[in-house]
Image (spheres, rainbow, N blue to C red):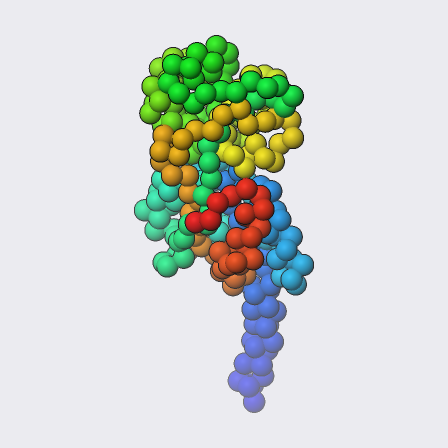
Length: 252
């Protein structure tokens, strides 16, 4: 009888713990350029009766370093494959959960209201962008900056422009420098330009001038709620993809 009572008490205590794990909102670490799209997705997910995911945005490099340093999270969405590869190399990506979520384009932005057009060709590009501060995410580590440097190198303009680059901590910080007038031009993703009314697209880089801009998503081995996998699947579903398309991202 005592054994039966103990088992019953353990079972009763176990039920809230299971319910809590199942209902806990997933923590999503995502590239800064995904702010609007993932916020929309989280809102839709919550309206469907799920716990609203907790979203944390920063440069993919900073997020990957947090994960590999032991920060606990459920999902990671990077703006390039390199940082997702680093997390996977450390054994922190759940097997079979990595997929490409979306794609993007790279553009030159200027403050809204002007009419200047930046020709994305070597000499012309170097002459215009090299004349004043150029806002970019840090090319040493941040995906948007790495894509930008690759494009400028491919077009033969990097050496002339590099001394004038203002290195920002992420792509949104680079965008803000242009919005505030601290830099006449910046290199960001097309979706960032679309999300900021204070800037306009002044030029578009040829897709072949830089590696493909892809956003891999994966569930982490530290994920502690079934909601993490459910939300990952939602983002990859037709409904989730429709949200990303509305925000200017391209299909995987």
